[in-house]
Every structure is written in structure tokens, then in C-alpha cells.
Length: 187
Ligand code: FES
Image 1: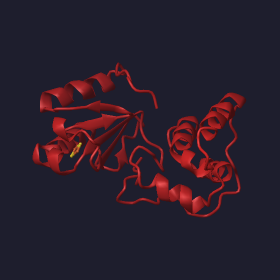
Image 2 (image 1 turned 135 degrees about the vertical axis):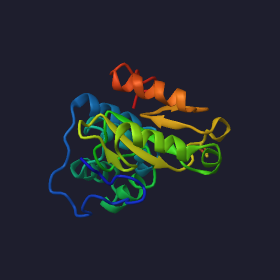
Image 3 (image 1 turned 90 degrees about the vertical axis):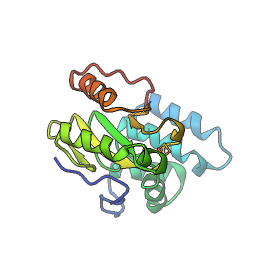
Image 4 (image 1 turned 120 degrees about the horizontal axis):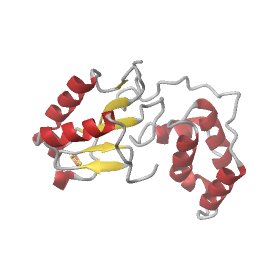
């Protein structure tokens, strides 16, 4: 399974208005209402709502999820895509259980981000922008994640792994491969 969900190819899905709109449980609707109530302007809730829809739609914003967001926030489908394709924590295509996002910006680059990506690619048999055939790992290169002082670093889900070395990375990947990785920050 090879997917193009990276910022290098920001609009992998067709930009047409989907006919189908996602439907959520009453609990999720209530969670969404709570976020909307915090903002005087509905569209300001776009990111918290995106995280909820992404979580509920299997880890990415599918066309029915995007249609739902446009409807709830009173914006155009294009407005949703503009935001979704800007932030690397929002996925516009399915990703693996462990979405490894390696920072490739200056501090990380200088301190060996290229080698970190290469090590992931070699071990997992995928290039940035791809997912392993078993759907376990996706690999991406992303821009600065705001942890430049602890470069090189990567993110899995919402967890940061900093001051990476080859040994440290091997241990992280071992844990994922054994299915023992524990997400400390919930998406
Ligand atoms: S340059 Fe990598 S976190 Fe900022």
C-alpha cells in the first residue's frame, strides 16, 4: 500500500463536494458542541473539530468527514482542505498504526535527520509518504515540530521522541513492532 499523504502532495483526494456526510454518535456530537461553544466565531474551532473527526474516521479526514466539518463550521470544502493540508498532524489519507513523522527542518537536519529517515526506511522497507503493506507503519518527513533544542527528533501519533540516536530509534521501532508501544498523548 503506497500512499501520498505528505505535505509534498497536499491534495491526494478529489476536491469535489462529497455527497455523503459523516454521522457521529450523540457523545461525539456533544464533544463537538462543547468546542464550538468556546468560540464566538464558529470557524475558529476548526482544529479541535478536525482532531475529533480524524479520530472518529479512522485516523484521517475522509471526504464525508470533510463535508461534515464544512457543514458544522459553515465554511467551504476548500477552507477545510486549506487547513488540513497545512498541518502535518492532520492526515488527508489513511496512515498506519504508528505514523512516524521525522522532522527535517534546520536543527534536526544539521543533527542527522537524514540518517534517522534513512534508518526508518531501511528497517521498515518504505519511503517517506508510504505505509507498510500490513498497515502498521507510515513514514513522513515534516517541517519543524517546535522541539529544535532536542534535535534530531520525530513524532509518533502525538508523542515526541527527542535527542535521537540510532540505538534509541531502534528501540522505539522494536517496541512498535512488538505491539508494545504505548501512546502517551491521546489523539
Ligand atoms: S528543527 Fe526539528 S523540531 Fe525544530
